Length: 551
Image 1 (cartoon, rainbow, N blue to C red):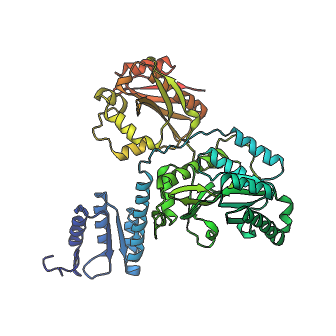
Image 2: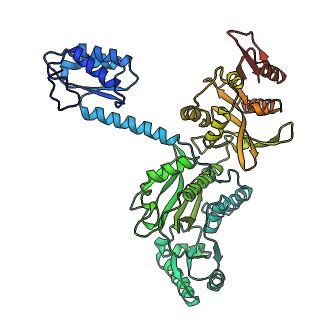
Image 3: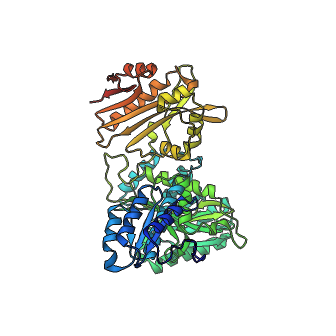
């Protein structure tokens, strides 16, 4: 009102009527600087709480902005509270509770926003050779052990492109001296035993060895340490490992995995070294991971600021660190046999990450499963659907499942379609291709959906030229498919191939049938589908439903 205090931004005064409340609420909701509204009410003589609740509910129905109410007044506001709750307006007894709810809402929306950032396309091998590692696991199990040695564990890391310091096995002191002379001092030695997992606790790690005499002293000191602290491990000792010592390690990180009974294999990242269990700066994530999720894991661990450099320490190369996390995630995805795995420390020297020590413990309870990824709660990228193929003009195309990293390529393809092709696919012409729309296209649940993209190389540039999609219905017995081929690549066999792949994927998922909705005047698509065995229904409202029975 005209006689307001001019102190608070919104002041309806103590004698506010329902009309004044309603006007103030509407003004706030119409303000572009207001994203949400918290209405606080305390009992006042001139304002009926039930009438106010009805007014709030009426305004809320016309607004897209979230409204939360705080009603204070004990039994006098019970009816008003019931009215608000029946109209799906959250209601609290104190402002603090309501504000906490808004903070949760903000955090949730912010997490979604960060989660759906377009990830960078990292140079990570999605399908490294692993048969040799599977054979290694079988040999270890035949030897009646589940703990891999450091050398065996690092073999996994090397295969997956995670940088390691070359590590050599020495069965006696003379061998250790010879290796040190070959790789050059200074070196580090560590006890080699499949039974000893925490080497430092037993004096099983000695650094800064810079001569033959120092090596001999270190070797015998280490054996004496084990004899005094853990004599029951003596029979399991196979010697020591020798590796060149990095000149300077700026940061020590832990990167590990462990199986949880509810969430399967989880990834742990945080501050490493011997302080890990005391200074619990760690974060937990779920595989599979891409660059965006790897960055979130680093940030959530509380180590991100530290890794930017301090007191003369060089910043960590975040791209290389993210790449190491993604590679580690791929390793976990491919090996359900692994119960625990730990890289500690993952040393960062001159900005680059190196696995200085590694340990793998196999899951003694693991048995072969008919499910492809029994140890994961999130279906990983299905590399089995990646194939090479050729257009009828001879050009090579890679057909593969879509990834979140494909957003820029997807945008380029959609924005260069003719109006006719776009209308045939989306039944309308989309002028504004938004990030939100592309999120839905590129971030999919491979369990309930599949999208196959056709990727072609033109010089040093990649380009998506076609895409087919299958979305399962809620009954998981049928699914809707669609296909899109760029105008430049019509009549080259690509549409036929993309639909054929979708049929194969639908059969793999055990669907009874798949169907599509096609514009009735899209004769080219209707002919293609009939050729593949689809049956057309009667046209209705300008569209035709086509169905293929799979069982």
